[in-house]
Length: 86
Image (cartoon, rainbow, N blue to C red; front, side, top):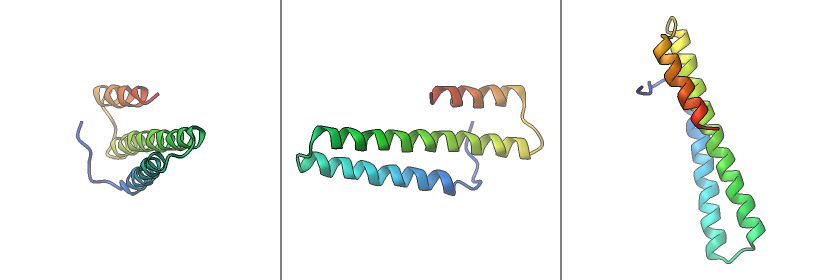
């Protein structure tokens, strides 16, 4: 299933936010920051990427539904992607 060029702005923003957070983790590691701070920042990156994944699947589902319906096969594929994020 290929992504369409629909409005991916929310997804792109979430991925960019995660990218910035990950850069922060690298700086923290290079600066020798404490374990708790680094782990907390890694959790924030993970949450940001999870949310990006859910937003991506939701965007694709919305696109399929608004195009006049989704086939059982398409729905099964989207569900598979959704469940793989959890």
